[in-house]
Every structure is written in structure tokens, then in C-alpha cells.
Length: 268
Image 1 (cartoon, rainbow, N blue to C red):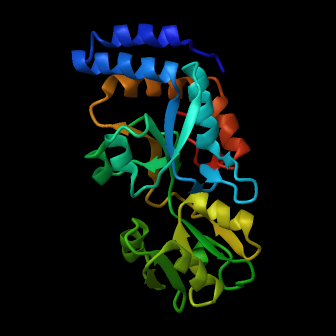
Image 2: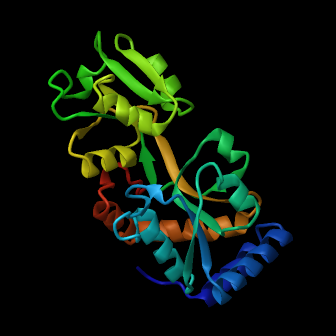
């Protein structure tokens, strides 16, 4: 990947000043100066398999957004510092300036857009099903919405209203947390549970019983991007230029293949 020097980034901040408010440009220069002198602070959710995952055996971070964070730090000619976060703490950590950017596959949702700004997307996932390998009644997506089948979803996720509308014959089971979805299927109390591609990939990769079932066409696709605090348009533009560069030079595609995410990578 072609690397931009920090002096180029400072030059970019000057050019952006002509199209952004003076305070935003000044804030960009200040942020880039601190990043250059110290480090790029990246908020992550360390439980997101293939995205930003702390391997429990090695305690090392891995996933596409971990590699992208290192690439962004190289782009800015600085070091990277990872800050453990979560989706629940996302808005607070950004608004309190505990990190410069959140890089853990943050879904672009209307409720979040009131609290933060998003880069252009680099991933897009619809709803996938996770079932049991040995469930002979469900071998494909078309087998799911059938009488006597039970579909589990986590309460409060967007999968709940989507599945309430989508299912015509199968029964919907709403559980309180994401672990309960797995337990329902493992115990045979549900036939499948609904999730996104990265989590479904985790189940299929790290367990012996689970299989990932894809729909023939995307269902309720959600774009994933990086998030910054509201009002940082100039900094957002720097990040968008980086993302466009890794799309153009093939870096993003290579990382998606590396982490098994090529079905959901966004290259346009």
C-alpha cells in the first residue's frame, strides 16, 4: 500500500480548511499533531470474531479491523494504541475523546448517526442463520421458514423485528442475550438462530456443532464502517481518503480474504 507521510496529512488539513469550518480545520491539525507525536488511539470491541478479536489462547488481537488499524497508523506514520470498548460504550468513548476512531465493524444505524459520524463502509452484512450440522430438517435457507421450526433471535437486535415480519410459518423465539441463542440451538429447543456474517463465521469456525446458512439474497443488509465523534468533518475526510486508498490498491480485498470476510467486503 502506498504510504502517505504525516507532512502530506498536514498539507491535506490546510487544503481542507478551504471547505470546512475554521474550527474543524484547526481541530484536525491539532489531532494530527497529537497522533504524530503520540499514537493513533483506536477503540475496539475485542469479542468480535474476524473483526476485532482478542484470541483467548494467545491474547493477541486479530481481525480485519485490527489489520486496518495498523494500516491506518502506517498511513499516518505513527503508532497505534488499542482501547478496549464495546457497542454500549461507543458513543461515550468517542464524545469523551478516549479514542480517535472506533474500528470494530460499527453498523451504520439511524440511532447511532445522531451521536457519531461514519466513514464510507468497508463491510456490509445481512442476516444469516446458524444451525446444527446434524439437523437433517434444515440444510438450506429455504428449509427454515417451515411449520414446527423454531427460530431464535436476541431481544433488542434488528433481527427481531425483521424476523417477525419475515417468518410466515416458523415460530419466533426471542431470548435475552446472545449466548442464549446458541444454547437454545445446542439444546434442540430452537432449530436456528439469526445473526450477522462475522458472528456466524465464528460459530462455524470455533465450534464442532454449528453450520452457517446463507440466504439466497441479502436480508436487511447493514453497512459497517468506522466511527468518529460528531463535528469532526475534516478528520472524517482523512479517514475516507485512507479507506478509498486501501480499496483502490487491493489492500482491503486482501484483508477480507485473509479473515474469511470476502462475502461481505465493500469495494465500491
